Length: 228
Ligand code: C5P
Image (cartoon, rainbow, N blue to C red; front, side, top):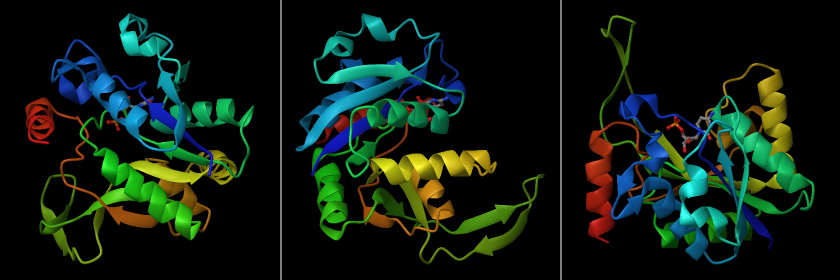
């Protein structure tokens, strides 16, 4: 199989309340994005990695990893889905629509290489797209806008969708374009594929595959990386 990777890294991370975009915050001796890319570079079978960087980003060129021979910068977009779509369009100029694409958030530096390889193996052997995910263990509540509980949502069969997510290049591009055109909120690749009538496979991963979102998450990520 031919496998490419896209890393959306064009967010500003406003919930971190930091002066740097969250992917550049220091983590375990380097930065969040370097930790993430280091892992992807170790995954068996992954060819080039396209990293979507905001056009106003001045930090990326300063990182040593930006000149790695397997890493290529593409322009980020307004939303995450636009960043991913830019990467897919660049890939499509030279790759085959049947090639597989792994999409992984720059902000998930603790993902385990073995779990990514498990995802690739499971999906490619079944010929189906899928994603890493963790089952929900908490009791789930839906609220009104004033934070009052409206209902308890049964947690059976509920999952947290993580990344990487893996799909075929052609199908994923078409699904995202169609979903965006119809105004559907594309918060991950699987949601676009669902809109296209697919039922992507959930492959369980460790709960350490956190997305750096709030200030506390950095200490937690440091802990997870140190305890591997
Ligand atoms: O903001 P959030 O945590 O959902 O972002 C998930 C990933 O998508 C991050 O790695 C972020 O850099 C990326 N992103 C992007 N382009 C945007 C917004 C977010 O590549 N316009």
